[in-house]
Image (cartoon, rainbow, N blue to C red; front, side, top):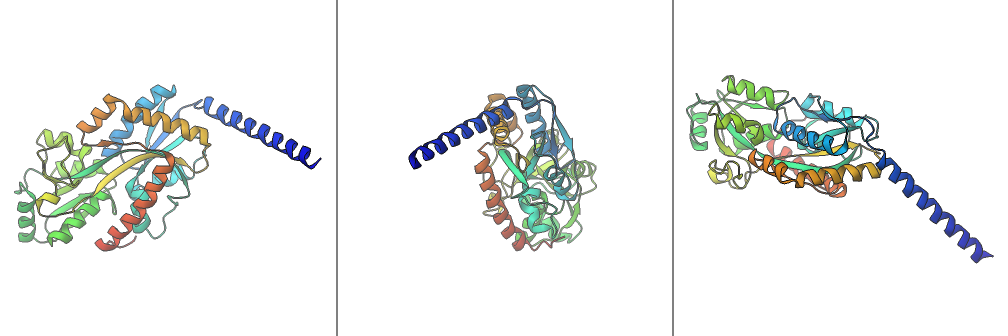
Length: 328
């Protein structure tokens, strides 16, 4: 006996594991059986929204089910992000995991209605892109240095838009204010689309827009680009200098986006979605499309994405503290 009992127990565990694996495989094989909702926690036409719509189209084609983009903006991305945190963990609700609601807002909002580290299942990074400092053509500034001279001559009179308090579009301007020692007035919006509309209308002086969001307006000369917030010039706009080379060494503020789901989504579904997203982001036409828009295509494993979010929370906590932005 004892050895026979041990052998029987081993056989039982082996049979149970095989059953579990087959059951999990069945979950992935039957998924998706209906349309998937991909929540973007910002208004339409922003840089991240543009990329997620392109990804969703290809993802729907590969999965054989529609992937519907649902813009749910508010509170710096918190509204749409919380909606997904509370959704059923069945793989039918995804969120555009954005640097602001997933990493920055922890340090901005006193009572964040979700926990970025425990309320979500990270799937993969998708892209990153710098911000581009754009001004209305009527503003008499054609370089960062000219803008700074103008701001010093008109303290508090120049306004800068942002896609929301605590966003990288907001923090980029706060960095510039602190390092250049200038006084600018902040005009927050509920998303990048509305900020661009008012800048195009001349209602605000400047905006650190996402590169994908502002690219078409810069090319049509409806806006003037003065600099980008990456350390190197993006391939899409090699003619535009970086803030780092314009007198502010080390100046960097990059936005990233990814795909995540509510916590508790079955692992086979997460693996399936990750595999499809990685395949899409490797496609030459998808890569070329993003690169032309000034974005860098990205992908990684769910574990790597989770670790990245954790590291970004720590990084932006330091930046928010140093910038002096008050919590809401």
